[in-house]
Image (cartoon, rainbow, N blue to C red; front, side, top):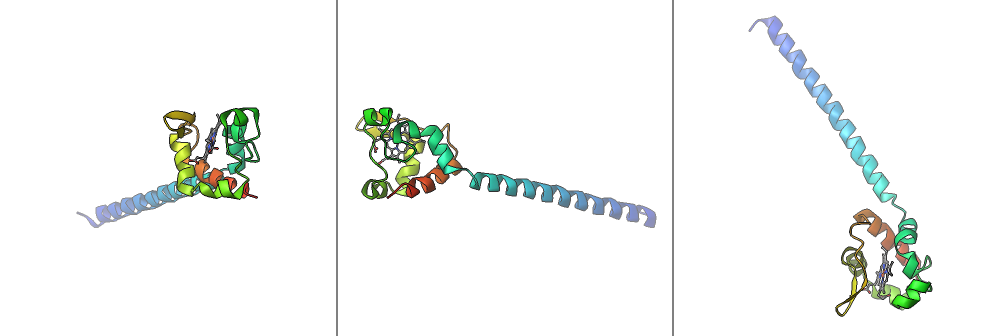
Length: 128
Ligand code: HEC
């Protein structure tokens, strides 16, 4: 190989590394932005949209549907604390059953994991 060819090859190699680094940086930025967006999922908003019809915006469950379904008052510390983090997330994923009867459907298709976690944080703020 001539010195010239060697030099050219080295240049190409350098260029490749540079563009790879650029691509990686862009990819990392995208990931960071996506994670930031997810972290910013608004628990109150997701709750209001999916859960408030029964549980009420305030978690008291004093809505028409809530009363009919017999939801508990989750502003009551005793009821709120009885729902562990695990239970809360599981209820969203799998729904809630009373014996064999499904009293709350699964929201696995409608709510992302990040939104579920944001709602959990919101749920805790409802406690009086
Ligand atoms: C159609 C009415 C309805 C909707 C809408 C609804 N739920 Fe429920 N949910 C219930 C009923 C009924 C229960 C059982 C009684 C109770 O524990 O309050 C329940 C129970 C729960 C529990 C307690 C589960 C347990 O094991 O103690 C959690 C947590 C919960 N819901 C969260 C949510 C979240 C989050 C949403 C929205 C994504 C939601 N619910 C939407 C009716 C509903």
